Length: 557
Ligand code: FBP
Image: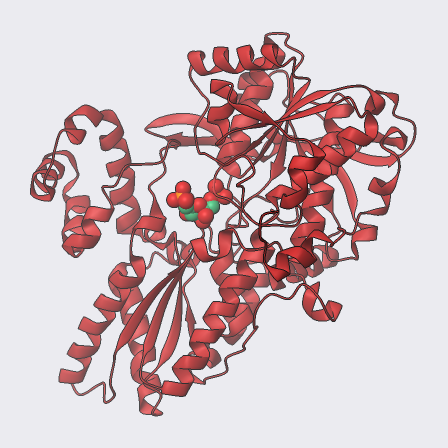
C-alpha cells in the first residue's frame, strides 16, 4: 500500500457532516422553484446570447419523491482553474449520490480541466479509485486546466465526447471563468437539442464567486486559514526580532477578499484593499506615501518593524496601471504575432512606445525593469494578466525603501528600514480541506447530482445558511446566467460571470476600516496558528470572519 501521512490516515476516517435535506435517499429529494432570476448586468444581451438557460428560477431542495434520481446516469466531471481545497470531496459527494441512486451509473473524470472534455481524455472514477482522495486537498485525482471553451471546433469536439460516453451531464467545478464555460456549454448543447446538461460548482480560493445564493466559494476557508497562519507566524517573528518590515502578497487574482480575511485574522499593521485603491483613485506614489508614513510613525515609537498585506490583484486597480494593463491586453491580443516575434525586453519596450498611449507608456517606464517585464508575460487563456507572476510585494518594498530614504534626508524619518518580501499563494491552494470545506464540498457534490438528476441545465450548485451547523444547511441551485454580465476580454465584449469584489460599504471592509489606524501604529497582532481538524469545534469548525460578518449583515437587512 502507498505510504500516507499520519494526518491523511486520520482524514480518511473523517465523515463529512451532511445537511439534513441531503441525508435522505436521493429518490426522496425533490426540487421546488425558489424565486425568479435575471443576470448581474446587461440582461437583454444575456437573454439574447443564452435563450435556453437565461431567466430560469432558482431551485431549492425539499422532501418529496424524485424517481428520476434512481435512473442510471453517465456523468462527467471537470476540475477547472486553480486548485482549491475540497475539490476531491465534491467528486466524493457526486459519486456517492450517483451510486446511491443507481449502482450502475458511471462517473468519468476528464483529465486536466476542460481540455479533457475537448480531447476525450478521461478516467472512470470508481469508489475504489476515489477512496484515497477523500478529504484530501489538491485536484490531482484528474488534474486541472484553464482552457476556455469558445471555438466551433471545441464545441464540436465536446459534443463528440458527450456522444461517445453517452453523457447525461457534466459537472464543472470552477471559478468565474470555468463556470462561464459551463454556461456557454449548457446553452450550446441545449440549442443543438443534445441531452447532456451542465452543472457548475462554485470553487475558488479567491472568494469572489458569490451572490445571494452562493454565500462563499469552496476553498476560501481552508486557504485563508493557511495564509493567516503564515502571516501570524511572520508577525510574531517581526515583533520578536524587531528589525524587518514584511511585505506579504497573498493570492486573489482580482478581489481582495483573501487579503481582507487575513488582515482580520491577524491584525496586520497595513492591509491594502484593491477595491478601495480604485474607488479612491490612489496612484502608486500615493500608496507608497501612505505606507512610508506608517513606517515613519511606527519608528517614532521604536517599532522598526511591521507587516503589510498586499492583495495579488492590486496592480489592476491602481488607475494608471489599470489603464496600462488594459492597453497592453488589447494590443498584445490584437497584434499577437508582431508582439510574440519580439525577443529582448528592449525591443518590447520600443514596440510598446509605438503602440501605447503616452500616459500608459509613462506608467510603464516608472516600473523597475524586472517588474515591468512581468507585465508582458503571456495572458491566460481567458485573456487575464497573470497577476500571481507580478511581484507587487517587491515593487512596493522597493518604492517604500526609496521614499523613506528621502524622508530620512528631510529629517522626517528617524528609524531604520529593512524589508523582506513574501508571496503566499501556492502554499494555500492545495492544503487539506478544513472541516468546513470538507463538509461544504461533499454537500456541493451531492447537490450537483440532485440538480442534474432533476433535469436541470445551466445551474450552479448552491448550499446556504453556512454559519449554522451543517445539519441546517439548505441546498439547491441557481442559474449560472444570474451571475453573468458582459465584459471586455481580449478586446471583445464577452458574457462572463461577474466577480464579486470587496464591498466597501459591507460589514467585512467596515470591520477593517474601524481598526486599521490603531493596528497600523500599535502592535496588536493575533496569531491564528495552524488549521485544526480535530478538537474543540470553536477552533476546528470555525468559519471565516468574512462569512460570519456577511451573514450577520445579511440577517440585519
Ligand atoms: P481560480 O479563479 O481559477 O480559482 O484561481 C485561483 C488562483 O489561485 C488565483 O488566486 C491566482 O491568481 C491564480 O489562481 C493563479 O493561477 P495559476 O496557478 O494558473 O498561475
